[in-house]
Image 1: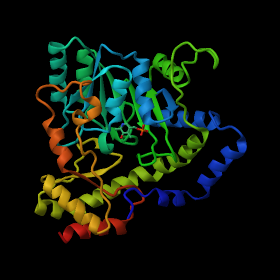
Image 2: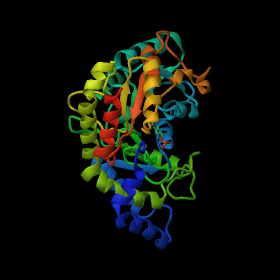
Image 3: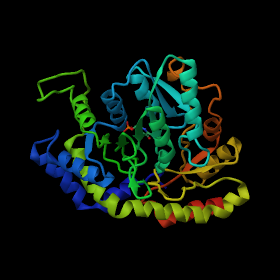
Length: 379
Ligand SMILES: *Cc1c(COP(=O)(O)O)cnc(C)c1O
């Protein structure tokens, strides 16, 4: 069994994928071009915003947003303690200061009360300017944007949505990657919408930020390519990846989001009695929310049970992953370069010991689902 079955997807997409790739090869145009323009148009339309700016990966997308806002050394940026490293890395990359905020046990996402506490702590105890919040749509579930937006408005903070895992999710019909002042995603192969290499995108309704992000992504270009008005990056989405994404997006929209939600419901039904019996928790989706199910993540009773069940499943030839084994505040790279408010992040620390992600994806297949379910039933 594959943890995320990308090969089956490739075969399911059939000749369309090969044709799209070969079209780019024979066109002689490998950077930019009509595929990139078309992809930006359809993705912006899908999330319901004016601008989509593609770039080289999801980490660059986050960094481009911070550069467009001019976030820098005197600024504090609030990020969840429970996330992939990039979310905090980009804050340090632009010279600003990451402040770690605890998450909700139920949703794995940024906790509004902890965010309030962290903002108060920074205002009372540091010389830093609270500038921005990066909220993450972890495992495919949009963060609590109604609450986070209220806090950002009240405190005058910019909101950046890290939708690397969230593309395709929604809250009350509003699409993920539309909740931030700028939102970003990643097209890393294993993300909900992935390409065959690295890729990423920024989304915004703001014309000025869109122009700035396009400039930063191409060596700080001005009115034309050899006019450089600021120090930027080299961060473009390759034409071939755009062509791949155009094919995949069609299937994502038409089939995959629905398929992955069906698998998640089936998982939850099949694992329900094992969860009661063994005392672990299944993922929960709040009312009005739709997840794109980047991961299907269990919360085991404790660390010992997590490690035992992980080993047991591995013995049954069922691959699992631990996202994430370490809180951001414990990462060596952030020692001395970050702020952890005095309450710490106890929920994150506990989750890091207890989470276990099962194989998931739109091509998982009901046979595999049944195999996982049988393995749990035999425990
Ligand atoms: C994958 C991921 C990123 C980074 O995306 P890349 O395309 O790998 O650079 C950022 N944030 C989160 C939450 C991610 O899962």
